[in-house]
Amino acid sequence: MVLCTSCGKRKAVIVVKSRGEALCKECFLRKFKDLVIKALTDARLTGGLGSKLVAVATSGGKDSSNALYVLNELKQTYGFDLIAIMVNEGIKGYRELKAKALRKLCKKLNVELIEVNLRKEVGVDIDEVASLYERGLIPFKPCTVCGVLRRYLVSLYAKELGANYVATGHNLDDEIQTFVMNLIRGDLRAIAREGIITSPGPEDVIPRFKPLYYITERESMAYFILRGLMTPHVECPYAKLSMRYKIRSLINYAEYRYPGSKYRLLKLKEEIKAKVEMPRTALRKCTICGMPSSRHICRACEMKEEISKALRELKLSKF
Ligand code: SF4
Ligand code: ZN
Image (cartoon, rainbow, N blue to C red; front, side, top):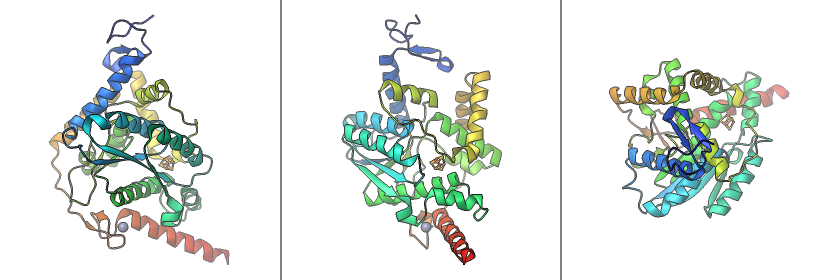
């Protein structure tokens, strides 16, 4: 039996090779919470959350459910209030199952859940976007549209609800996947932009932060199981089409062959970020929707326009 390296008394249930730790359930759950507090501290949030409203962008998956669970535990200590927002992207065989689990969790935690329907909001769902992409009618993959529109709707609703912050379920693996993707794209500006919290912007831009920034996917899964949280084991059918999916396998292989790769990549990203000074892009208001944007028309409105055009063309071709 491997003993917990933290308390030295109980049986270890998880080994974290990269940190040289073997932890029992109690110590692991405590460590998880400590890593969330570290993220809040590094984001300089611990002193400023009192009486604030934090909107958690939730999907019903393990990461955003864990973020919601831990923030719910911490809300009394730091004096903030919580609300959950879920965007229903309209992905058959996936979304409804995840939504059901999330509704149950929110009820258990007594956190209000705001459900936003993508089709009602923008006139299209991700199943339809995927079909347009497969026919070559739009250049965007489902994940690209889904990511941009979900982010857009979460910001819109968070603003309407009077939230001061948006918390997301991004974990350490997500963070380094994004880093490697940006490296491959040669996008230094994007590397400098990504972090635990978004850089301060104009007043009407709600800051987004990542409570699970220091937590690996594996630890997040272990926490989810050890907390007895439930979600159906279904994967989004479009995940495999994304660049992230391939990069994820590549990084997992590197971690398997060379343990500690993930932490080293995170450290490298932080070093680059600290050295690179990028001039901040001035934000204006999107001329279509009025949301803050660095461009004349925001990316979400640009995508909506292209999708509507493709849908119109498809309708005409059927006559
Ligand atoms: Fe959306 Fe892609 Fe995630 Fe599916 S895998 S929910 S399409 S971002
Ligand atoms: Zn817009």
